[in-house]
Length: 123
Image 1 (spheres, rainbow, N blue to C red):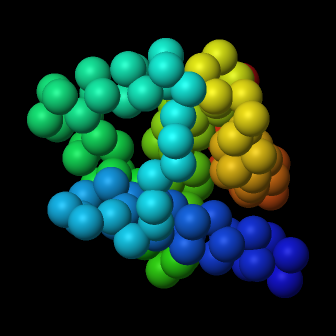
Image 2: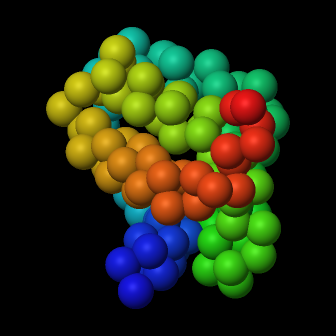
């Protein structure tokens, strides 16, 4: 039951924040960022594809978690995304690191719970 709650919570977070990146008018207001963080996000937005790609991946991964389809694969794909979210906040916006920690910890818990599916990768 615990794993199911964690999986659904992480899936919902990913779908919501992924949609927020893709929609022209975000429904979750973007906070005021420190200067360096704002410059970094502006540069990503100016590429025209990075934030959209991350948002789309977050929606796909979140949907996979919510539908319980290819969960182990979804968690592995999420690792670099959650790590980058964590590092962004660690280095550029430490005051808002709580959400990044939640995503990283939930991802870690689910990877641990599905470790039997990854074990052969490390033998």
